[in-house]
Image (cartoon, rainbow, N blue to C red; front, top):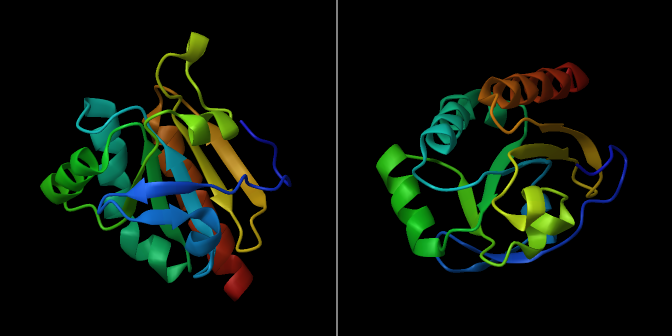
Amino acid sequence: MLSTGTRAPDFVLKDHHGRDQSLTALLADGPLILYFYPADFTPGCTAEACTLRDLQTDIQRAGLRVVGVSPQDAESHRRFRDKYSLPFTLLSDPDKKVTRLYDLDGLLGFGVRRGTYLIDQRGTIQDGVLADLRISRHEEFVRKAVEVRRSKDQ
């Protein structure tokens, strides 16, 4: 995982519509929850995505947005979003360049580690969590990020 307080590496990846998206452009609308996951349609990744979907109202009220990154192509991401009514952007990182930039490449280069970052609008990593199997830690992380953001707004 990248350290809190460091600059989030910028990137350009294709979204679920096949359009280029950069971190800089994604941050233009405010802070971001950037999460990396191994694969569309797997049980753990589906549970994580649906949890983020179910928290979407709270996430948006806190002025945050969610973006997911995994190695699958735009078509897979589009089908995954459609099947589970995911209201957030999914980005394709087929060669795992961005995954490596964010220090989430799997053991010996296989797969993707499950990691989530909170990145402020200036592009600074505010916090992060790495939990390959304990998806509940990612939910706790997002809930905490929402609470921190809400407390700052009051």
